[in-house]
Image 1 (spheres, rainbow, N blue to C red):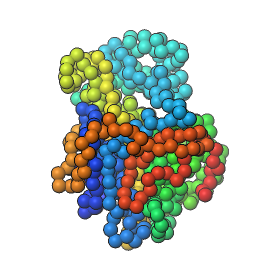
Image 2 (image 1 turned 45 degrees about the vertical axis):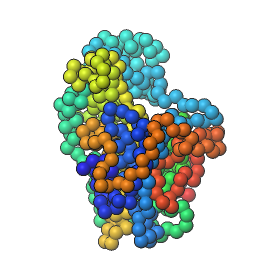
Image 3 (image 1 turned 30 degrees about the vertical axis):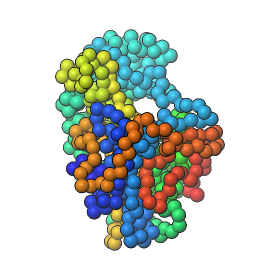
Image 4 (image 1 turned 90 degrees about the vertical axis):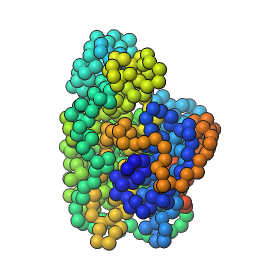
Length: 483
């Protein structure tokens, strides 16, 4: 079982609804050695079908609205950060020290977009963070695994590039492969707050749902950005001392409000928010929020009926369960960068045979597909949990967990290229998806941040919203309360 069938099953969907999905195929979309287009289509498809199902239940519709997956819209949304313009200015996606580096025996991938990560990387290497040449020289003298452990010990982010075979032999990979794509756990038997029936146009399946957004970077914010599209009241909370990167916040902030809250001094304010919340989404490494009493179990005890969605890079299990991570690092560790890399041979990479040292240049997916794909799956899992709460005799709280590394394992080992025969009505567009004018799936509007050009949402179903009700605002300026 692959593609959208697998994704829909992973979020607990009824297979009888799959015929409601059709696809516009664009052959040039998200081209890669790995089936990235199929991964993206499956994740967005599961999310759109979950939204249509919840909307139909709440509106009392006799039939779930039809879902259309357009490869062009999906491909555009999966690189939304590249399409963003703020008053005509394009953002910078990666800082100078966030890249692949040669080591004594192969390659290492670092992530240093945030100032504190940049400082820790430089400290581990005993060089000045303003000197990329010194960083490169220091890395070239050490083995990849030595760098990985030294930088991690210093609180920084660096991962040795591994082949798929090397990753498969790692204890963390074995722990990841044993887990389902989406983990589900019932947290209590108390009925959740009843949601009112829906009417009007467009159909907003998550209208009236209150979502506390405790996420950062891309995957979690993509999930909550999607819930905001569907009508949820999403309040993102950040610590005042950890401002988000401005352009990253703009790209993923559509439809939300943004506030700061110091949990060490403003605990009463948080508890008041939690008491009225329906969903809490967390995107910090496992255990990071536990000292504040924000584990899934602790949240469910204080707010019975709550849906908790947890996202991490490596999973909440295995030897790397407490490690920080980002999409680019997961691609490097799990063999994706080796598969997509360039060697001295033509065609397929020899890195899987000769090891990382055989790569003349590590590769990357055409999008941060682990982030975006996992984000849409996370939103789908939340929507399905809300739908299940509407069932007779149901309504209990639920925790869902996803990990970028588990999505990577699915991409490398679980998805076949192409469409699934007998499932989807296929509307084929012969044009090359990469060559279609991107304006088809972009929009412009004013905002407090300036004039924005941005990617439209790819989640589409009959009667549903085509854009967010509000643009992103300035980070942290909204009051920490529900509207």
